[in-house]
Length: 169
Image (cartoon, rainbow, N blue to C red; front, side):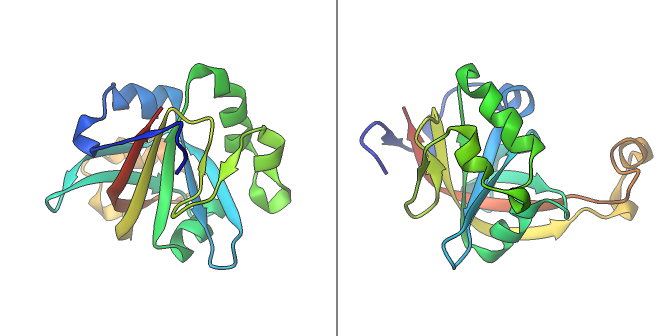
């Protein structure tokens, strides 16, 4: 990864990730074995510890094109940006990579390494998948969550991944 970033331990990451994920958003980016890359804007997830490792929790709906890429790869990245990239994140969250090269259209610079990420990011997390499971309607203990968020019954898949590398600008 480039010299504009410095590597830190995941435990050294600073900031309010509830705000970063829920309000400022992040990109989930993965590369298929054939070298194609796709990304999506996400506003649901978390960072913490799981199975004795620094971990992320990411949620992807089954119809999202990026899910194919995350499923096909062992690794993916989460990238966090400043407010100056809000327009790019809005575009990447509203268009499908099935319909064209939305990464190029966004104006962000794709960097390829162990995981693909974006040069303009403030924080890059290189993640290795550990677990994936689709949310199940019978597991909701608050039926209102199911009613409000899943009227189409397109339940998210939850991915748990180990943070193998954390980079900060």
